[in-house]
Amino acid sequence: MILKAENLSMRYMRRTGQANHFYAVRNASLELRPGTVTVLMGRSGSGKTTLLHMLSGLLTPTEGRVLLGDTDLYALGDAPLSRLRNEKIAVVPQGRSAIDSLTVLENVLLPGTMAGVEDKKTARHWLEALDIGHLADARPAELSGGELRRMAIARAMARNPGVLLADEPTGDLDDASTRQVLDVLRDAARAGGAAVLIVSHDSEAASCADVMARMDGGTLSVMGDMKAE
Image 1 (cartoon, rainbow, N blue to C red):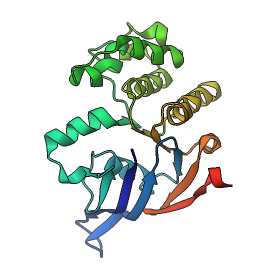
Image 2: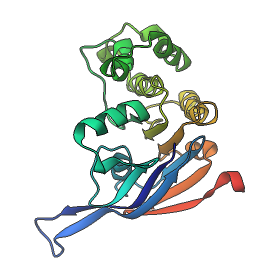
Image 3: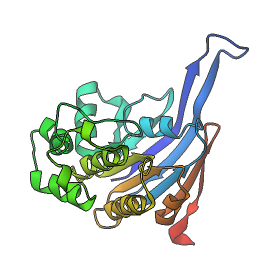
Image 4: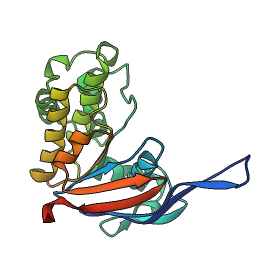
């Protein structure tokens, strides 16, 4: 299923200064296709995470719309939008997202648990694939930053999402783990047929890109389809 952004903008009001507003993202259009990895790069503060949050249904744009197939995300009410996100769109957030009172396995299972579907076999598969299977019964407080990041990726993968949006997924990781995570995300597209977006500062991420894009001052530029080159 294609996730499409059409002329997305996010405008914030200012309380001081000459201008009374500024754009974090302005008129961004992007198409995420099944089986394709799109890598979005840009400096900190360029609007990359804001765009990802709008694409995921977590931040209502000031202008424009986001379509998943024929469904306009922001035309839905809160409850159906939440269900659609849980069923179709997985997000690997940049910050810490673990629930400390749950084990690592329970954290990975949580989206499925909320949907009434617990697949422990699949959850354990992704924990093993990311080399943290031995930590299934540990608590998040016992994990390193890199292990927490891999747990978040396992949680996203365990739902077999149609769309996977990863915000700096290789942050806190060493070179070997970075390669491992990028391989998992690439395989989510190649083998799983997901539409994958990787937001990253890491030049290594470009190696698995089918499409490269860049944010600069809130403006999105799609730099090219690497498959066609």
